[in-house]
Image (cartoon, rainbow, N blue to C red; front, side, top):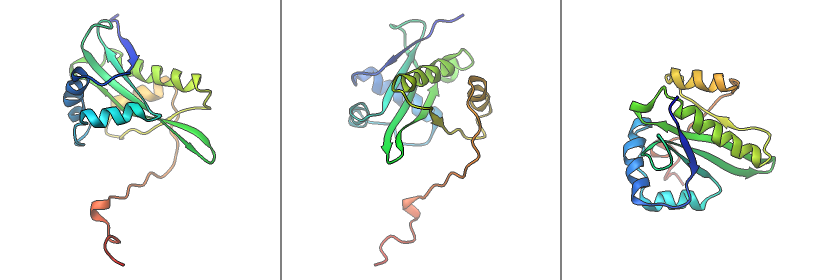
Amino acid sequence: MTSIFIARVETVNSELVQAFERLIPQLTHAPIPSIHDLQKLLDSPSILVLARMPDREGPIVGAGTLGVFRTPSGVHAHIEDVIVDADKRGQGVGQAVVLYLMQIAREMKLNGVSLTCNPRRATANRLYQKIGFKKWETNVYWYEFDKDPIQGSD
């Protein structure tokens, strides 16, 4: 079995920026995070972790974020942006990242953690179900400000 090393990101450096230049396009069409964006993430309550193979000195092959936020009903956590390099998929990297983030949430004494996954990502959906995530029937809504009909109407 291939060895996977997962660790929380403590500092922003050029290796981290270069890793996200490679990883983000494999997940989404969102802009690549800048050094400033990554630093703001590390300064927030959210937690960013990286996966390396075959050990702590190996290249970055994946990442994930535990978004942590407080509401009147308590502290919540949501797993976001789990990304695995295309050539490393199927080797347990995504599972290792998710389990590591879940352990952090446990250590925070949270009741659980949520995540969303596009139905087209069949492999990822199977992974989350294998880990034990239960599909939660709810409506997810998105409001796009660029198409805001209210904008500018006083």
